[in-house]
Length: 611
Ligand code: ARG
View 1 (tube, rainbow, N blue to C red):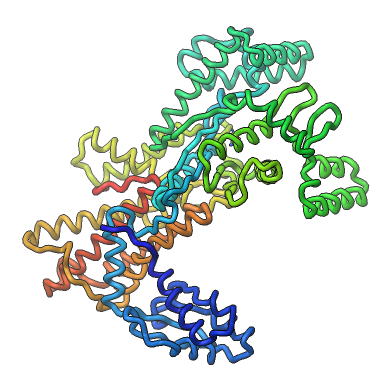
View 2: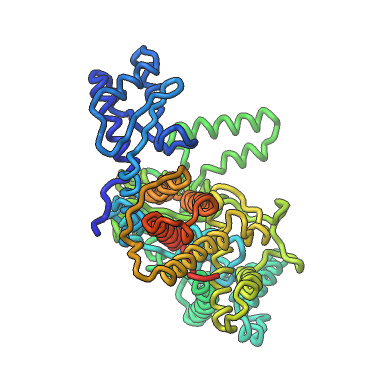
């Protein structure tokens, strides 16, 4: 099957635009009119357009008259049953039922892309996600970057993009001197053998505390870092060990989450390029010396920022708060070489940008981190553009997500205190899913039940994250994660599995019937609604990609499951008396199951055939 070039909504927009242009050939605004949205209520057609209301203003005409003129400007296109003018000047489009059904099935039954236009063909997206730090456990906060990034990989690939998933591990910096010093003095080698990362974390914390209390310890840590950076073999070997141990722990989590990367380039990889980056900044006149450091004052690159910063500083000074004035002032200083001559996160990210552009020539670079890094990426993107590291037209996106709190909005913590570790979280999800599996499938053996519980448990945790707009905070509750009646992973998996079992029953009861090629014409509004939903799958994928919000796809899937359940409650499938209707409805059910499975797969969630 060939892939669709456009979606139905784009096609309808184009049809309407033609009519607006024909009706008002002299209006430049008419050439931009015709945007459609699915109609929210029955009786308002299938798609709606409200552009006549705006156009009326520039044409100095009553909106209804504008709508009427557009509606009748050209003969009715073949796929439409009618165009009606409603209310103050809406255009309601009703498709011919056979056209709607034909499009819905063409979309849902397109095994290659599910009707998603291949707008990314020949283009590349670099996706920087997960990117945890060495010698620290991945906690529940890291799950967001990993899971959102993983879903974006699927979504962009569905549009035909080449996706380069890059795990930008935090494997460089002064923390390594602190760990090396602690390692030498008080590492517990047995604890390392048992479970290295928590012990590395303990070593870091304790050594850091000592450094703060004792200047000699601090100096010793600093010297260890310098030795490491100068290539001292012993320190380098230790450092490599820490990375290896951490990577092993990360990989266990990635395996459970079904996440893989195309490349894992840590911060250390870019270190040889850093002096060159600073040199370029200086040559371009962007960086200057300030109290021994080399900095870019980002305000000089953007007058609006300068204005904003001046206002904030003035306000603080007017309030007599010199300290916060200094803080406001410092916010815009992008340090690229520290006073001690060392480079930092900023310099590394500039080099990363440079490398990615040169190596992959991407159309977009998307970086997923928590929202505390919003200022960092604003400045990074600005400096990169001014320095000419990225060609104009390259889209730089920072997907910034909110934190996860407990269900009351308090910082998430376990009973023992501290953030729960990702592994513990997944283990608990598994245990809860296993209860559901045992209850619904008492006959499954332990191995099969365990495998199913892992799919459901991991899927539930991932989905609860993905269904939330990345920009917002998550209030985590196990009740919501496993809500079998709400917007949850298990609800969608269950909806899918129920349809699969219905189809199995159908095939057993009516073995000779060719449901895959059955005729289907909607007889009821619940069926029409379902077809409208199915046909909008490519739009949902497109919106999720354009806004980097997997939640838009999750919303779509939840809506689909709800529309299906309305259909199923109202109309019989297996018990439909007319064989033609029965076959047609079975085909509709199969289309829904395929779409649920395909959409969940883009989000990185398995849809098993049974629950
Ligand atoms: N390692 C960083 C952290 O845990 C995230 C890195 C994101 N990627 C980047 N290119 N800066 O906060």
